[in-house]
Length: 206
Image (cartoon, rainbow, N blue to C red; front, side, top):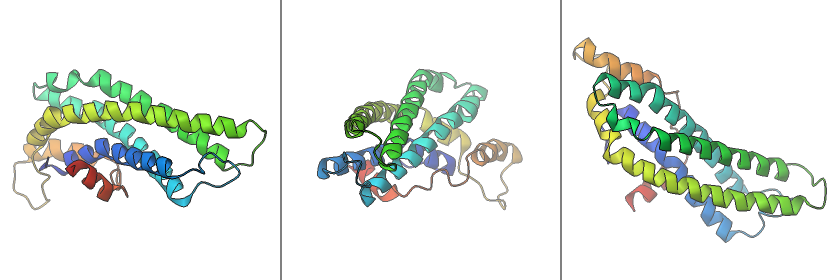
């Protein structure tokens, strides 16, 4: 789906990006057999994928905050709060799952970047990978459902309410520019600059 407003386009990408990284991680885990050995450094591609996933998860958290702080206000002021309020509990669950997955990522990086301290470390690392797979699958399921609802409910409405992002030279009335520019300015710079865009585009078109 194409959106006219750049902020909404970028926010849609924020919601989608973790799915692309989780899919890439799953493929690399199936294709590699050495990720469980702490005496070895992580393979370069796998390490890059974990870093990309961490970035996407952090940006997802920011995106969910953006929804609660700004899109929620937009819908409330336009009398369309019901279009978004019903999704708040699911957004909170996704935020909690994201935090749990970030914690697993931190444990894995801590284990593989430090020398083994005891003989049980390989087992513990394997447990971390198993937890990563399980939590990643749970988050993917939740995100796919949430993204479907976003694309069919509140994102098209937000795109319509905000309208296209206008250039400074535009002669559109200031009242219609103010809301759009304020919400656009609230998105951190570089929030959606992900290296996964090509993979995400392939995933989205399938």
